[in-house]
Image (cartoon, rainbow, N blue to C red):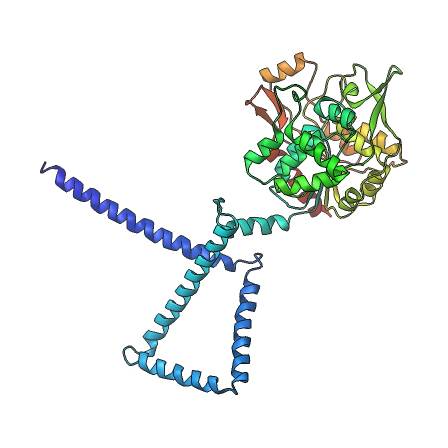
Amino acid sequence: MKERIPSRRKSLRWRKKSLKRTHRFDLFGRLQRALSWLLPGLVVKRWMLISGFGLIVALFGVSIWADLRPIYWGIEVMFSLIGLITKFLPSSIMGPIVLFIGIALLIWGQNKSFKSIQKAVAPDKDDILINALRAKSKLNRGPNIVAIGGGTGLSTLLKGLKRYSNRITAVVTVADDGGSSGILRRELGVQPPGDIRNCLAALSTEESLITRLFQYRFSSGTGLVGHSFGNLFLSALTSITGNLETAITASSRVLDVRGQVVPATNADVRLWAELQNGDRIEGESAISHVQCPIVRIGCMPENPPALPSAIEAIENAELIVLGPGSLYTSLLPNLLIPQIVEAIQRSKATKLYVCNLMTQPGETDGLDATGHVRAIEAQLASFGITKRMFNTIIAQKDFPPSGLLDYYLSKGAEPVQCDINSLTVKGYKVFKASLGSLNKRTSAVLRHDPKRLSLAVMRAFKNDKRDI
């Protein structure tokens, strides 16, 4: 027992030292957080100064109203207090002490005030209010981005881009006619909500439970199997409000969406594709399963009108991104809308095309990055546009050999090869990076990684700005 007493004392001393050190760090952290309110870009300092100035002006107004007498009384009281205080300690010592007390009270009051605001506004949020304001301020200064496409590729891109800017517009194709979206389109006469739902979920900053609810897909129930809650929600809102655009706006508020999601058109668009063997296939779901090379695509009705909000977003954009996504069923349908093509052509923004990781059996068999670009150029040529529209191509670096690639090869898919020289000769800038990720949650599949993809896009954007 006697041997244990010294060790216990040492343990107590260590704990006391640890508590003191923790308390010291806590005080330092509080001081640092309080002073961080003075950092630029938060739009807080100016209102604090205006408040202080307003108090001085108000006091000045009271003194005028009272015929200036309170000023003389205030000066007399101040001199009396100074004389009383300096009787105990000289002014050289008492001055700094009082100054320190005043600053400490100011910081303490400010800290408590903003904590009260945070508890009232967002009691369930763990982030400190100052950190949230700094992050929002940074995102509000981000570039004005327009992402064009559809399918999982567009939603993957948006998940990454929302870390760089709040000013994002997703222009989404509405040509889908398969699955839940196709059923709702046929039975309710609404535009297909599936791709729009995915984009809203990707841009959402709300709690994961609400986003998961929006993405929830029913696995049982007569008439409900295969439908997602978000599709039903958007379809119901479309019926109530009269149009999909208003339904999207309402859904964006529920999900606290960072940016906006806009359908490419409000027309009931149906795709068709002309194959190399002369056949003509109708319907997006049928086109994605063709076993013959596609020569060109079109839509019914021809030349559908674009939504004004989509055109406005493109005109104000600093960065326009096409892809990734299925070439003929997610990307090119957006370029069947003349007003969108003309707006992109007029725009002075940086324009990027993100190439797919793998070819899609039937739809893009044997196409490399140059073949994908050639298909986009052919579509633009149908509107008489012969100049390059997307100046920079982002492609995947060569994949190392793996069992996963062998699996894809056995299914008829292969990596989209990128010959830098053939694209450079045509005047394109090529940016190759590691963009793919291995998704092990469900099955082994190759997908674009949101962080890697968005990082590559932003680096290409900055490089383009630097070259201008």
